[in-house]
Length: 287
Image 1 (tube, rainbow, N blue to C red):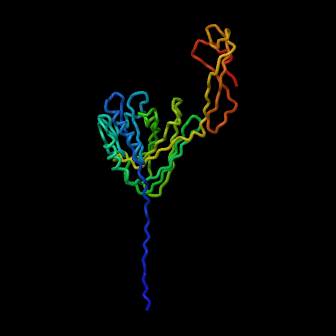
Image 2 (cartoon, rainbow, N blue to C red):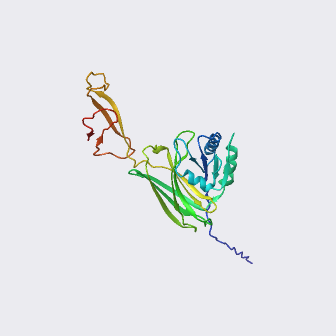
Image 3 (cartoon, helix red, strand yellow):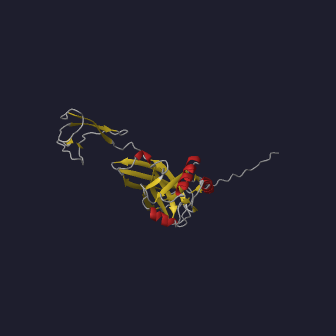
């Protein structure tokens, strides 16, 4: 006698969890004695944990952040230093070693699943940075009044290594698993920026409960950036032959124009020489 065993196999649709990227926003100013402790604590955290994006909102100093006041008001910042983890967990104040405190807040968020996947593409076109974020909903979103934010994070020095340098927010209407949209933001390049020291940060946040649903960080591709550098090599044919341009003398300035771009060629270049010094340039334009 044969015994037949029936096996029932159940299939169910699975939602694939997406790794949550933790964002910590520090509100800091140069005059307050406890702010350096906070900056040091977040730098230690950045150097020791994965899936972490720190952002410094500078309220003063050499490189103040745009929309510092608006962002501080959004979180109800009173005392500084003020750090906001994930948009809704705050640490106010400083003094001493802040790393253990910040690490505990990071650990509360790092293992959370995110309902979003963000893939960035960042390029340069002309004098603009073109930011694109390909966002896919991997699990239904339940938060309300969501927005997508585009920021640039700037390395100014070892202490201010992630200062917010530009800010843009847009409405975000995706809510259902499987939905997808490409969001774009375009900003002009500030001539004072060091393009190799900038990252583009994108995150989606609820304006309801302030939770940051997902974040992404990406460098800027410099393949399309045209960089022309000039150098004064020497002065020749001056009247007394000492290689210096003295009052009343005429001389020839020997200049080098160098294309430092990674892949782009420069053609049909016209250069114009100008100066604020009391010097008359006889032929200021040359090809």
